[in-house]
Length: 180
Image 1 (tube, rainbow, N blue to C red):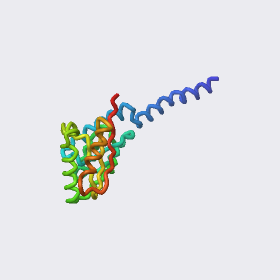
Image 2 (cartoon, rainbow, N blue to C red):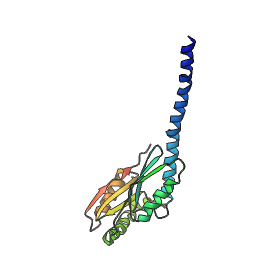
Image 3 (cartoon, helix red, strand yellow):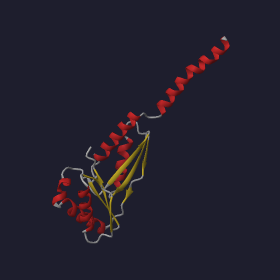
Image 4 (cartoon, one colour):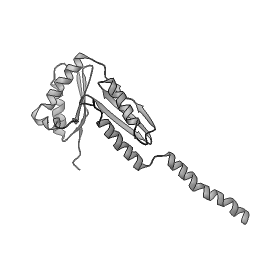
């Protein structure tokens, strides 16, 4: 019996060590939550991140994937560089699209901003530094992203955007904030 026990003891003691090594390689849920919070903060603190830019991200373990559209190429690189510096982030996949420069799109952005944020029922969204309604314009096609308080505000922002002359299409991706 002693030979069997001698064989089982090293196996039993090595199993917890294998589990510990695997746990060190896989970030915990708490670590992912911290990384998510830090990435959100880093992106919101970018100096040229504005209403005409939309940046989203995914955190999968120690890898962060950046998505969205920006007007300035430097904003894409700044976003990637700021996320790389976050503790616990090992890899950054920067899939942010840089929108092509266009005088027509620049004019549409200004007119859309006025149409949405200067409309009395939607002026509450103009308060603060980071505007909750993102206006993305590419080759005359408009996409509204972000969060609003009600379905009526979502529909009103879409209607205001549709009323701007020179727009080919409007995609209203605004989300209604849940009241819970």
